[in-house]
Amino acid sequence: MIKVGIVGGTGYTGVELLRLLAQHPQVDVAVITSRSEAGIKVSDMYPNLRGHYDQLAFSVPDAATLGACDAVFFATPHGVAHALAGELLAAGTKVIDLSADFRLQDAEEWANWYGQPHGAPELLGEAVYGLPEVNREKIKAARLIAVPGCYPTAAQLGLLPLLEAGLADTSRLIADCKSGVSGAGRGAKVGSLFCEAGESMMAYSVKGHRHLPEISQGLRRASGGDIGLTFVPHLTPMIRGIHATLYATVADKSVDLQSLYEQRYANEPFVDVMPAGSHPETRSVRGANVCRLAIHRPQGGDLVVVLSVIDNLVKGASGQAVQNLNILFGFDERMGLAHAGMMP
Image (tube, rainbow, N blue to C red):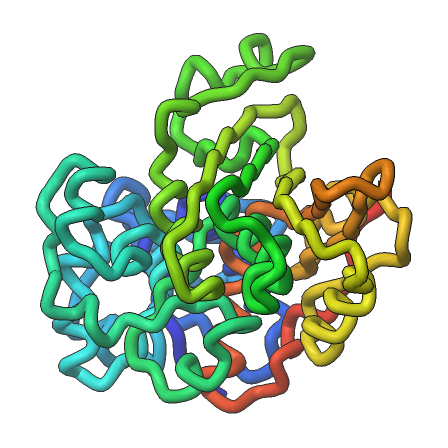
């Protein structure tokens, strides 16, 4: 049994961590923090957790208390983990950061996209990008894990096999992605109101989204060279889910792409390559730590279309964080995550 803490437990990723860890037989959530809700019991704020965390209350973040944990999750806005991560690592605590603070390896690039100087550039060299399907061995030995973003998870898992095999034209990749409203967070925003987001769909940040450099960084690693990526996110009127439609030019038509994907992910417990001709639905992964993929070559041409769906709060955030925890501490990777998606 390990003891964990959660910094920033009142947002959607924080409560999703609590929901998943309530089913984990090897984890005791000992600390959960929130400056604004200090003193309030978790089960009072989130009645769905009654019977699981009835004695656990939010507290003000304290480095000494958090440093007594085996691992600490940061489910916080960007910039928060910068201030505390170094202290916790010095205390011997493993840090699993769900924010964007350590995903980009270039501190200047991070500052350009997030509008502030990077607060802990000295830690970037040891931060391990927590995409298990790529970095499982590095995760096992990590002290600091940067959990991938939701769009980057769906996009990278969908394109990795093509790039690793050197099959795709890397100069013109397209990621056309749709996200549920929970991806915008729990804070009150006009664009997230029911009357604003319901019965409508819209693209946003077409000029450049903060997840663009993260996706590009991962695809460059997979291809071994520069890539040209157009990434367009959309807001859709659903609560959870990401649907990524990915386009790549693959001139070699002799390659069995279905077999390529099946072989690449044959031993991955949370990637499901569906039968040829399938069209995965976001509702099939709702609440589950699974990425479902389908590969198409329309009209037998040289343009390949990959469909990739995840739950943005699970495989796109908290579930992937727990998957990293399991790898880090030598638990069965499926522990606390083996449940199926919710239907309908």
